[in-house]
Length: 143
Image 1 (cartoon, rainbow, N blue to C red):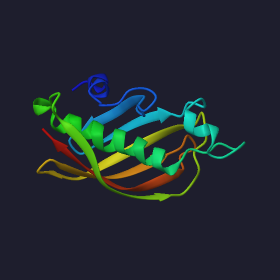
Image 2 (cartoon, helix red, strand yellow):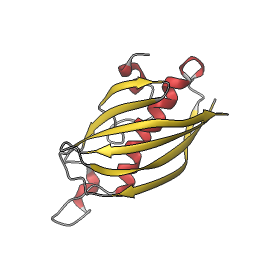
Image 3 (cartoon, rainbow, N blue to C red):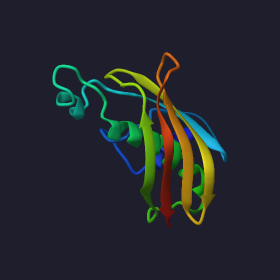
């Protein structure tokens, strides 16, 4: 499946679409990138005069690229407009801040995909090659 086709099937739109490009994808994992636009609303108050990307947004970026994109790839033949995708669990360790205008790379490795549940090991890497956060995320795809 073409990477752009996967992005078009995501159930998100701007300003809540956190996938710019899928670099590679196969049945074992996915790698993609996203650049944080300095004009995103959450930067206005997190933190005052020193904006930092909230951890919940970092988790969402990893979930969109690392779980939802991979899930769409894995179930493409049966994906329909009645498919629901929901986060079921996340355990993330935050190691470094991410600032406006930063480009990050998410690397996801499938742990398992069965009975509609996809669990992945994910990590986010900044442009200098440092891991900014990592953990596991799981979600359910219900058709």
